[in-house]
Amino acid sequence: MILLLLAFALAALFSYFFWINHQVKKRRLTFFNRPFSPSETNILRQNTLYQKIASTHSDALKNLHGHINVFLSEKKIRNKYDGKAVTKEKQLLVALEACFPLINRETNYYALITEVDIDYNEQTSLGGPKTFYPTGERLNR
View (tube, rainbow, N blue to C red):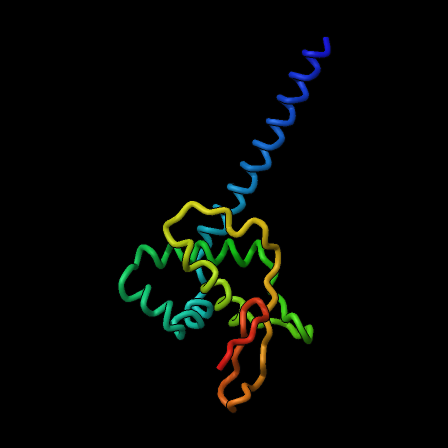
C-alpha cells in the first residue's frame, strides 16, 4: 500500500515537472518566432557586433533575433543606481550582448539570472556620448 502511494506520488511529481518544462518550451518558442519590428531592427543595425553578424551569417541573424526576444521576455533589465526607466534601445543592446554567445545553441537562457542591472551614465567623464555598463561594472579607461 505504501509502495503504491509512493509510486503514485513519484509519477505525479514527474508529470508535474514534465508539464512545467513543456510549458516553458512552448512559451519560449512563441517568443522565439515573434518577428522583430522595424524600429527594433534599426536600433540593432547601429551596433557593430550586429552589423558583423548580419553581413556574414543571415541564418544566425534570425536565430539571434529569436534569442533576444526570449531573453527580453524572461529577464527584467533595470537601472541599478537611480531607478530611471531603461529605454528599449538599451534593453535591446544588453540582450544582444547576452545572446550573442547563444547563437545556434540549445540553451536555458541564463536560468539563474532573473534581472540585469545596468549603470547608465548620461555623460561620460571624457565628455563623450551616453554610455551604459551591463551588470553595473564600470570599465577602467
